[in-house]
Image (cartoon, rainbow, N blue to C red; front, side, top):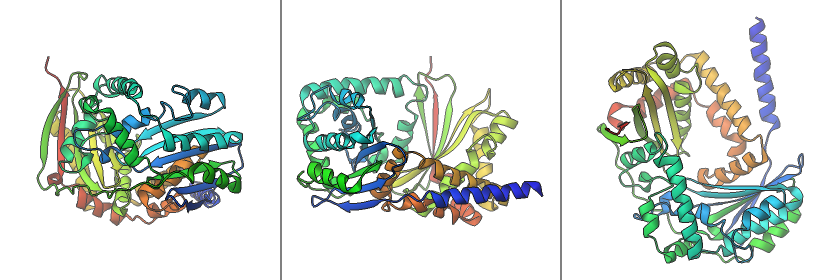
Amino acid sequence: MKRRILSAAAVAFVSMMLNAQQIKFEEYKLPNGMHVILHQDNTAPVVTTGVMYHVGAKDEDPGRSGFAHFFEHLLFEGTANIKRGDWFKVVSSNGGTNNANTSNDRTYYYETFPSNNEQLGLWMEAERLRSGVINQIGVDTQREVVKEEKRLRMDNQPYGNIMTALQTNLFSKHPYRWTTIGSMEDLNAAKLEEFQNFYKKYYVPNNAVLVVAGDINPEQTKKWIQEYYGSIPKGTVYPKNYAKEDPITTQKEVTVTDKNIQLPAYVFAYRTPGAKERDAYILNMVSAYLSAGKSSVLYKKLVDEEKKALQVQAFSQGLEDYGIFGFFAIPMGATSKEVLQKDIDAEIKKMQTSMISEEDYQKLQNQFENNFVNSNSSIQGIAHSLVHNYMLMGDTNLINKEIDIYRGITRQDIMNAAKKYLSPNQRVVLNYVPEAK
C-alpha cells in the first residue's frame, strides 16, 4: 500500500513538473526568409544565440563527401570583420562559450554569453552568415584539422568506422550512404572554388533558422536582429530531391575488418521511417525496452545473467528522411555470432507475438517523461530543441507536446512496430571483425 502511495506521488510530481515547464516562444520570418525563434527566460543572466543551416552530409555531391562537416570548422576561421584566429578569443574574452556540430541533415553553430553580451553573439553569427572568409590558407589549415579528427575519432579508434560500414551497406541510393566526416580523398581533391560555391549555395538566410534563448528583452533583440540580419540578401533554396531507397526484402550480410580491434562486433540493422513519423517514436520505445539500462531485456539476459555478451545495445537513430534501427553486440569469450543473433531474434519474436507487460510499459513511459524534462533543463538545450523541432520536425511546439506522442503510444503499437520493421529479411548483418595478422 505504501509503495502505491509513493508511486502515485511520484507520478503527480512528474506531471506537475511537465505542466510547469511549458516553454513559451515567439517565431517570425524576416523579409529575406530567415526564420527567427525567440525564447525569454530571465531566471539566469545568460543567453544562447544559435543558427542552424539546413545543410548536412546528405547535401554533398558524390565524390565531395565531408563538405558540411568541413564548414563546421572552416567558418571559425574568420569573417570580414573578425580577424583570422580571433573568433575563439573574442568569445572567451567576453565570458562566453561556443561550439558547432554537423549531422546528415543540418549544421548548427551557437554561442552562450552572459546576457549583457547578447548583441555580440548576434553580431558574430550574422558575420558568419554574411561574410565568412573562404580562402586557401583557411581550407589548408582546416583540412589538416579534420584529418586529425578523423584519425583520432575513427581511423585509430576501436570500432571507429563501424557506422561508416553500416551506412554504406544500409543505403545504396540515398546520400545517407556516407557519414558526416566524409572521405579525406574527397576533401583533398576539392578545389577552393568548390568550397566557396558550397558556402554561397547553402549559407543563405532563407536556408537558416536563428534562435535566441535566455535572458533577453524581445523588443531589443528584434531590433538587433533586423540590424544585423535584415539586409543579408536572400538566396536560392534548392529542392531536396534525394533518391529513394528500394525496400530491403532479403537479408544482406557483409564483413568488414578493423586493425584496431581484438574482439569482433556484430550489427543487425534495419532501415526505418524518418524522425517525423509516429512509427519512429514507437521504435525509440522498442529500443529503450530492449537495451536502455542494466534492467533492460537484452542487457539483463545476455550480459548480466548468461554472460554471452560483453556489450549489447539496441539503437534507434532518427534522421530526416529515413531512420536506422539496429542491434550492436560484442561477444563474451567463445560466444558465436549465431548464438547472439539467435538470442536477439528470440527477443524480437517475443515483442512481435505478445505485448510487453503493463509494468514494463509504465517503466518506459517514466523513462521518456524523464528524458523529456531533462532535454529542456538548460538554455542551450531549449535553444537546440526549438531550432531542431522547427527545421527537421516541422513543428517548433514539439518542445512542449512531444511527450504527448509518447504518452499516446500503446503496448499494441509497440508490438505492431516490431512486426512491421524488424523482420530478418529486412536487415543488413554487419560482421565487424579484427584484421588478420
